[in-house]
Length: 168
Image (cartoon, rainbow, N blue to C red; front, side, top):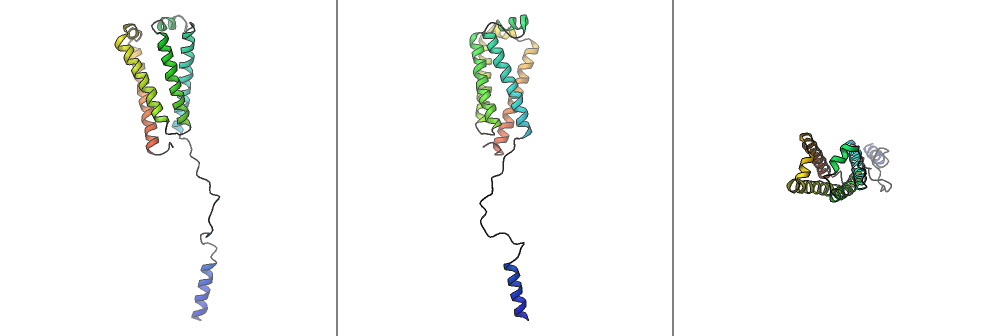
């Protein structure tokens, strides 16, 4: 009787319908990465800023600044180099935004490069151009600081995404 029970147990273990498959599974597809909601928000925010910056720079370069007489007063202190710098920074920002949307690691150095270029240009203009400093009233400095703060927050978030290996 013992032998029959042992044989039955061995047979049931060999044909257990709940046992894990022994065959190699080759049709498993790697898990798709989903974009975090904040990546969508940053991308939309950046795209609006890039389009606005490029449009404004091109309009100012063509002699028709966006915003009428008030904008003309503001842009008379800006040189062609300022507008070209805006276009360059916009191009770097566009590349960074595309890479962030694609969840690529290159987004971080591009964002840092864009921010650093903006800081260098602003620093040079504040240091050596009194007419540039005159453009900013009390409100202008606050808007500049808020913009820099947003850029730092975005860079910190992308840095965090990179450290969590969301960016590849």
